[in-house]
View: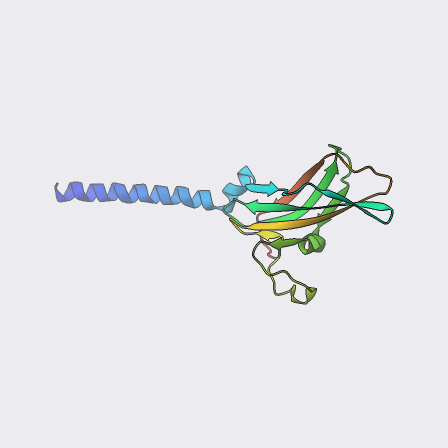
Length: 164
């Protein structure tokens, strides 16, 4: 092989590597993830348990949320609808109350809010990470326990405390 043809082959390999690197970089870019939506798995390991408290009812259960995306996802809010109703949700959770109801799998649980300023926001789920959302859904006394629930979760692609 001549020196010129060897240099040509090396140049083609570099060009191919550059195109491949550019393609992979674009796949990992948050904009790509945003265009197709977040890749999450939501599992409810046990059916909601209705509990009678005073004159009302409470549904107690948990959702396990796994982030299969390449970027951190922050859960902004969750709405829960009963029996396929499209009106107002029977329950909505957001902000600090949502953060207090969540924990990262494998993380130490916070027993007080004194360390909240130094701990990461539990609403942010790292790539490949799993968080658990503990739900305590209070129902009015005159409402029957719903036969099924529909959940609407809203995610963002920025960590909860960041701006920009």
